[in-house]
Amino acid sequence: MSNTPVILWSQTKKNINLKICLSDSSNIHCKLVENNIEFNCESNNLNYNFSFQTLSEVKNDSMSVSGNIINISLEKVNHT
Image (cartoon, rainbow, N blue to C red; front, side):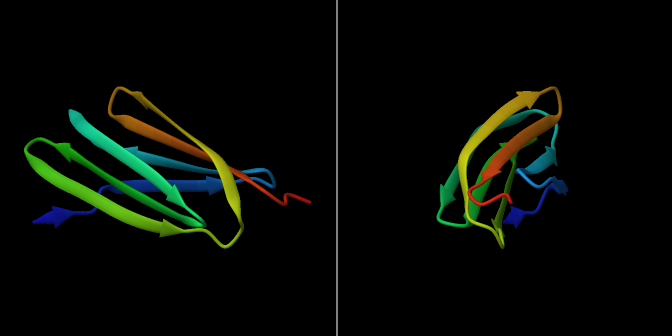
């Protein structure tokens, strides 16, 4: 069984930012395929995943984990 985590989303002219709220996350995988983010991980013996498609072309994804928050940042290719 798969679950969807709590996702907070924001954007600026240059970036798209996602914050995923999960405690004790492990086996975190995030893949950027064209304009689609595929995410999955484990938390408290449960599997979590989601797919997120952007309307703008993005590149240079980065991910960091701080406490119960997983941050994903994407740079928009054309940010004019």
